[in-house]
Amino acid sequence: MAKVVEINCTTGVQTIRDLTAEEETARAAAVAESEAAREAQDAADTKQAEDRASGDAKLKALGLTADEIAALVG
Image (cartoon, rainbow, N blue to C red; front, side):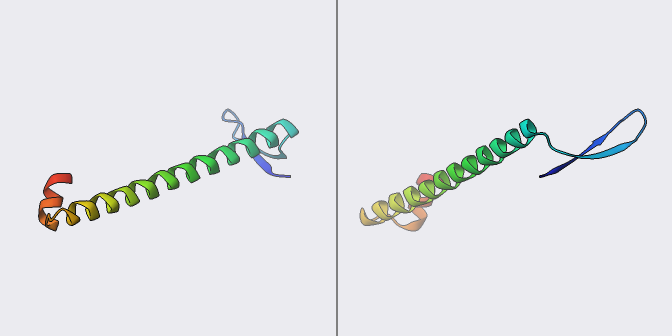
């Protein structure tokens, strides 16, 4: 089981204890949510890069130079 450190700001006393079942469940849910968000962002980044490469290839196929493409898309 995971541990948590509680610090009493008034006294400065530190207490190390096990997480409760509810805290452990909430922690696991937060970890899963964070992982899902990271995977979604990775997928969005990959799609954006693929779309940019596809768009550049299509513009090159139309006869535009790399400089012209850069001027269009920034």
